Structure formats: C-alpha cells, structure tokens
Length: 219
Image 1 (cartoon, helix red, strand yellow):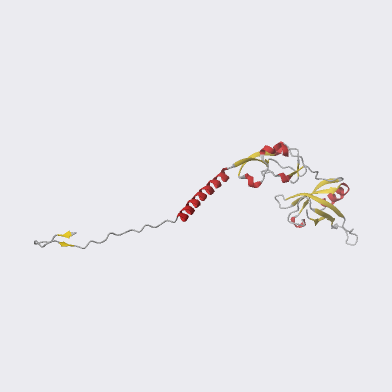
Image 2 (cartoon, one colour; image 1 turned 90 degrees about the vertical axis):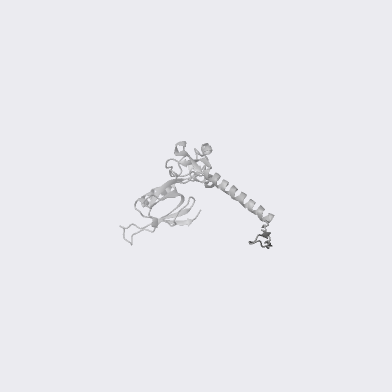
C-alpha cells in the first residue's frame, strides 16, 4: 500500500496489518446429540403432562346417603366427569350394573367417588346377629378410627344413681365393627354386628350412656 506525500515527495510504502483470523469453535457431535435429546424429552414430557391434565373419564359418585348394609340402587349413584381419575381408582360409569344390587360395606356419603372397596356381596351380619348403631363421644372411642372387621368389647359401666356397694359388675358383650362415621359435631356413630340376644341390653345401656368400648382385635 503506497501513501502520497505533499510537495512532490515520492510515495512511501506503509506496512499492512495482517488480517485477523477468527477461530471457529468446534461443536462436539456428542454434546449436540445430547442437547437434541434433552429438547425432545422435554417436549414429550410437556405433551404428556397436558394430556394427563386434560384426559377425563366418566366415573360413579354417590348421589345420596347410603347406610351401611343397605342395597345400592341406581338412584343412589350419579355419573361425573373426572380429570385424571385413573389414579383415584373410582368405579367407571360403564360398570354401573356391576355395582347396583350390592350392599354398602361402609357408609356412602354424597359427593364422593365410589370405589369397589366400598361395596360387597358378602353378608355384613353373621348367623344370629343384628346390626345396631350407638353414638359415642370422641373420648369414648378406643382408637382414632375403627375399621370394618375390628373386634370390640362393650362393657357396661356402673349406674350413677346406684350405690357403690350395690353396683353390679360390668357386663360384657362382644361385637364386630361394620363401620364408623363422624358427624359434624365430632361425635362418633359406631355400627356394630351384635348377637341378637345381646341387642336389647346394649340398646338400653347405650341410651343411658353406660357403655365403654374396648378394642380387642384390629382387622
């Protein structure tokens, strides 16, 4: 490269800077493949999440209260649409005919999904047994929750009006838990299978609030 000078001075060649070479970063094929794989997996995960949230199914829910041991009718149930209900294990609406005619193994409450564990074909009462319900205070229940099949002992407590010397020893009655529900007032209602001969005495003691419940065997 030549530079012209003033006053007729001959031109002088100026030094030329060498061109700047930009080094290109080499991309390892393995890292590029890993990035593509992660992007693909992320897309599949997002698509699966959206599909799971949007997927709905028709299931059976309880439309009105059904007491323990009562036969279930079609009017007791209603079909509802539930998103992602597969993980909850409710009864599909298509199996309505399989449920109608069975008995409630536990108390069925309106607005809850129905599961197969809540219905049964087996008789809830054995030979010579009857079902009773007794109301208890929370402090009278021997466990936070009693479950169907638990064995309990009902023990009569002394009459408050009787003299201590004349109070008879506590009478004992064996029973099997059918169900237990908790009303809004936090009391407990215990459904029991009891021998028919013991029913009158237990009902009378329960009316006098003279029963203590002892858990003897958990189901």
